[in-house]
Image 1 (cartoon, rainbow, N blue to C red):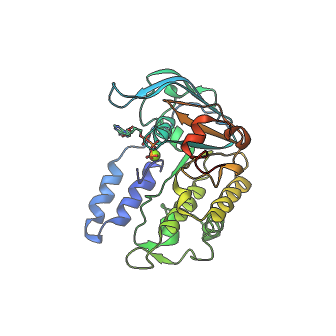
Image 2 (image 1 turned 60 degrees about the vertical axis):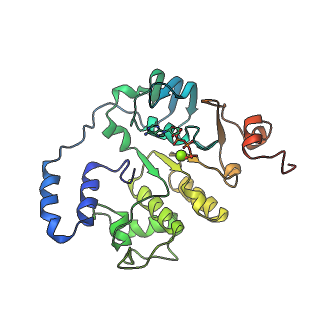
Length: 281
Ligand SMILES: Nc1ncnc2c1ncn2[C@@H]1O[C@H](COP(=O)(O)OP(=O)(O)OP(=O)(O)O)[C@@H](O)[C@H]1O
Ligand SMILES: [Mg+2]
């Protein structure tokens, strides 16, 4: 999942940067031999996500989703909550077409997802989780993987990711530089995603590595910088929910309707998940 959603060229270059110099030329020839990803398929500007009556199983027996629906408007901020192992990350894998859906309708921006190449789809998405690979090198190299990004953009990305007090683009990170914390790793991943300027941010529990106030600040920064982008956040923590437009609860192989925080507190699956009754809330 490290390279998920990066264009092929960036992946190959990042791979090269991780090699010892001796292996580098061999890797460059690998890169030259790799084919460009197919970017076919017409996509609209607004990437509304519509999944209707979806069924999905990894092993054809245990269904992760059954009659699952989710509708997310372009530009919305939504949170996804649900029990561990219930299928939240699987939703992202389906959205990025790592697996085909079994039945039902799946459209993105009014186009049938089956007609879109994975290249054209993933180009418009950024995936952020807690395991982002950071290689030895400067912050700039780690954020702009293909090395062509102006340093003002890197600085802006660092500010959006609330990292500008800790790093400059020239800071060296990794085992030859400053060892980074989990929260810095996540924020570097955010900065890397920002440079990509995606239409959909898929954040998988990453922000829970941060304190709640930094978590909210980063969401605010993303929304201000990319007002038309959709932000989807999977979370096990309730600190960000108020800042979201709607929250979806994954329960019993399907999603609830998108709810406001007020509606959420009436939802039985949500109350169980966050043990509200036990806390007397
Ligand atoms: N590649 C895979 N092959 C087979 N089964 C998988 C695969 N990935 C996930 N699963 C299974 O699918 C189910 C849903 O996994 P998923 O990662 O989507 O859950 P999740 O809701 O994201 O959980 P968590 O909150 O722990 O991250 C789990 O039972 C998991 O074991
Ligand atoms: Mg998960």
